[in-house]
Amino acid sequence: MKQPLFFLLILLAFSSCKPSEARRPVSSNSGSFIDASIKRNKQLNESEYARIASYIAASKTDFTPSEYGFWYRYNTKLDQDAQTPKFGNKVTYTYNVRTLEGRVIYTEEDLKTQTYYIDQQELFTGLRKGLKLMKESESVTFIFPSQQAYGYYGDNNQIGSNLPLICEVSLLKITTN
Image 1 (spheres, helix red, strand yellow):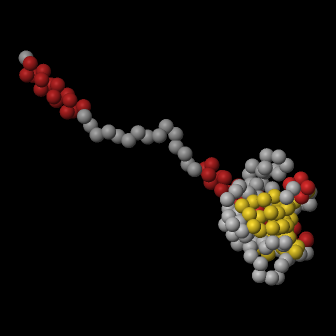
Image 2 (tube, rainbow, N blue to C red; image 1 turned 90 degrees about the vertical axis):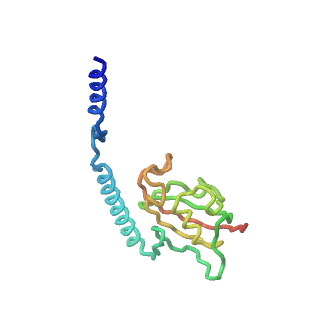
Image 3 (cartoon, helix red, strand yellow; image 1 turned 45 degrees about the horizontal axis):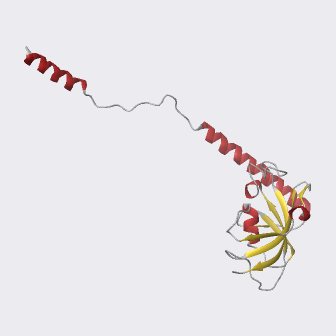
């Protein structure tokens, strides 16, 4: 009596073991949110670049496109072979911020004189790259698309979401380390 029960248990044990199957997800994601986000961002960039091109054409001054994705023109340019700031140099500068429509967001008085250690402190991307193009005692007007400025979030104060900016920057001093 024990032998048939034993064989039955062994047969049951081997027949119940089957390879495991992968579980299927309860819901699947098609990636449509990402596709819609990409499309929305491309449209935003196109409209910003069109607004910037319109501003440049209306200003009747020559702005130079930079390799970093913004435009600039010199208000005061030094022709001598002065050095530009390098990694770790301390720069002292003043600047103001306004919209393409000319609305002043921050004046030089609001922002006061700033100091920044090149590539060692937080600063919005466009200004960080723009300061590296300047020499001591130069003044430059930059046009930053929103992704080079404060982007989607703004500055949580006066700069709104996805806002292209114009900054007039004066580099007062470069201190090398």
